Length: 453
Ligand SMILES: NC(=O)c1ccc[n+]([C@@H]2O[C@H](COP(=O)([O-])OP(=O)(O)OC[C@H]3O[C@@H](n4cnc5c(N)ncnc54)[C@H](OP(=O)(O)O)[C@@H]3O)[C@@H](O)[C@H]2O)c1
Image (tube, helix red, strand yellow):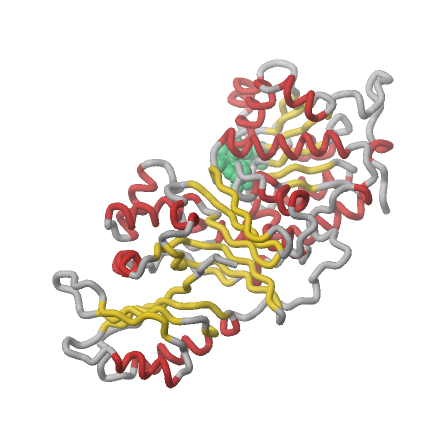
């Protein structure tokens, strides 16, 4: 049942709710939490002006209270009990920036049950438990905001919800993991193989000691899940995302893509088709002349195609203390403003769409249709047209077929760019190629994304 949050707040010294500061309780004061605290303090006057009222952190939960005290100073209640913050009557909004998916789920659900709005940067939490969390928020008439969870310094959630709200979104595609983009940039620029590029990323602090979430595409899939739910008004469907990371990407393919006029990027793609939606994270070739190919290092970029707006593109830092704080505080300013608004009058958030595509299925891998890159090792002296003949039998259209530039000691390789073909046709073609006498090793395939219209 809807409860007006204004009514649910405690009166503070007789000051009308909408005039007094928004009281924030924060769980976790690490990279994002300390950045949020710092930027809120530094830009206090501007933020209060834009929010129409002050925003004050009144309570913080931390494991190391001494360290937390050094960050927040006097005047903020410190506790080592996150649930105390989540449920305390002096807290209007819970900011969850501790991470993880177990206890964080309990804290967020408890805060919602106590009529508090929630701001979080925790993509893993929302990708895995978003359905339950957003349903609870709807039931209790509060909002859950998560701009910091996706491509942090790019206000993409707001762009989708507000700036592009007139559109039927056709597709969203993005470089939404900085670590893998850094590694791919190193592989291209310095000719490194994957392991060497990963080691550099770790040495420079761009990759965690355990980089599995990033390099296996999981982190990008978490973010894609949230982007897709926003773009299409569909439920959060992390389990349905086809996820492929960059761990098996070879340096030779980075070089061969370059020869064909493409660069390899780890893309998250959510695309609306007649028959359903495609949700996939995979390394893909993008044209070297495309802006997306020039998003290098740890930067992020997201493209959105709306039926009215056409293609739009957004670029910015995908991680960082104050970069994420920028997004968290933008959500807090929203909270400060909507605190006095009836839930039904707010610009809807995830899963609130009246005409959601909830019924549309997520397409299987076999049904996904894109152009492809194939690298086919062949015996010296083979007729490269035999490769084209195999593809023709499987009805895979060929747009370009060339011999790879010679590299010392390397086998001859035929490079193919296909036209659009279903993955099932490509799989059959690869199977047939592997059995062909001209072929001399494993065939490699990658998707090609033109990212045009
Ligand atoms: N860093 C970024 O650039 C970035 C960007 C976008 C989103 N995010 C997301 O933001 C969230 C926080 O990331 P972060 O980089 O700030 O992590 P972090 O630096 O590790 O900070 C997390 C903080 O939460 C504290 N914490 C964890 N469990 C706690 C508990 N049970 N009680 C009290 N405190 C607890 C940790 O304390 P200890 O130090 O004692 O462990 C730590 O201080 C994550 O969900 C992450 O995915 C981060």
